[in-house]
Length: 500
View: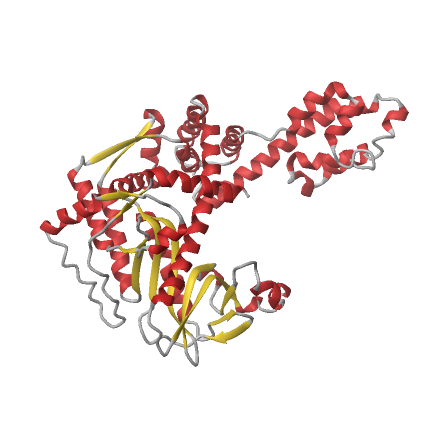
């Protein structure tokens, strides 16, 4: 319900403010599996560089955001070389450095760098552990110093209402498993028919004067409090280079964001953006499948037939025997969507979890002809993800001789595709170069704050980050190189939905 509501609100907002870029570029070159020559780029002269920039800057406001209107027009093909050219031209025409103030999103990456934690997963796990530990200790102090003495002083007729109080408290204090649950470990002291594990109900009836203390003890820690606990824990238990300076800077970083009140606002914005992004993503995936289906309907009928599969899961062959995959009615009938599964013997960490759409060439033995990835906003970041994550995953899958697909309740081994497979990227909008440049700056800043201690310490002292544009140009150079390399294995097609 929330996702649907956010999607509706987002569509209303886009109706008035979103822009689609019309690009007048030549069609993408087909890939060749035998040639190492990059796709031809006739537009790579000085004259056409400025021309590409002019075409990229011409935007038309959307007059409608309904799916029917979007599907009525043919999506625009995007030339990635020209798109990258336009961004590079903007950088070269601007200042050699750029500056940005620290934002709430920078807080955790900065502290992770200062505490010498290399892995984001390790850092997030440490935060969760510290939160549970601190909340456990807060509730433990309340139970031992305030609640237990008061319960013991009650008349017998009141104490029998909580017959498992002492036993539950002893278990919560002695069990390492319960300690990992945080404050929740102490809820069992209210077990029984009367309170059914609701500690606050026990306190309100038997010792109402402790209600406010109890609610405070049960209150989850704020993000700033958790970070403070983590910094103190690292300061006490770990040793690394420039430790004192880094610990002091970490405390200062927390205070900076806490003093300007950006913590709660940033968290709420991130939470809301998560659901809006999810709603937009689902809408884009459906439009991609609708366009592929509509394209097939409008094309002339040939001897071969295309089979369009949506939301294709990627599973390892070892999971076929699981009960949930044996019930075909449950697997392949999910509302109005038909669920498909691609089975592979490839290692799980080398493949992706799903494809938004897969087009099969239907013959005596079906084979993959197209794979599509749907991204609501097409940008350097989304293009980088597709080229660095999806491309290697697809190549791994195609090397599996046992690769098979299940759809419509049946399973078939996939044959080898003689032609170059299309890797399609479908978006609702193309991020204009000026916005893409802003995104790249944010990416460069985030990377610098997690990889360069000197930059991080200066940022804490100054309240802003200053970097050279050469970092962004290097990123774009690598993005272009990755695209050229990927074109040797796939026919990469980028489509952006256009306004009517």
